[in-house]
Image (cartoon, helix red, strand yellow):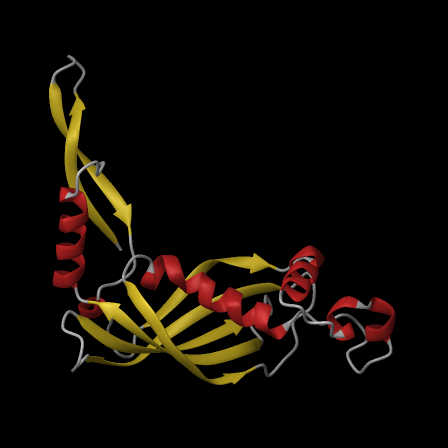
Length: 189
């Protein structure tokens, strides 16, 4: 989704003319519809560097992710991509389309599963289904949305699933906050 505002610019004659500006954002609480599936594109091809960097950044010494010789002796016969990298990528793919600038907080993840492995060179494609939503009873201007995330590889095989509960701004609260920021001294835009 996008929001549009009008700002000054000049026309061909150098005269001031309004210009429509568009800012990408996620969905307001009211825009989430139960049962709708959002496909997150483009896909993300996983590299060896991604796997090594994520695994070492998170201090995970698991040789299945780092030691090709060891991994070759294990049931899958090669290095496995860190499953939390897979989950992080799946959630990350959804941000621009669903929660960029509208998320207040992630409340929790549940029912996380990795039914099939991810290997270096696989391309991950994410999708999210709105499972439920309700207005927050304790936080005016916010609502709770539950998403069911699914990641598939390039062959369409499911490699990760997770449910995510999150707190999201309503349109009114989000627009009010944006107006307050714009009115602050030194605000640009």
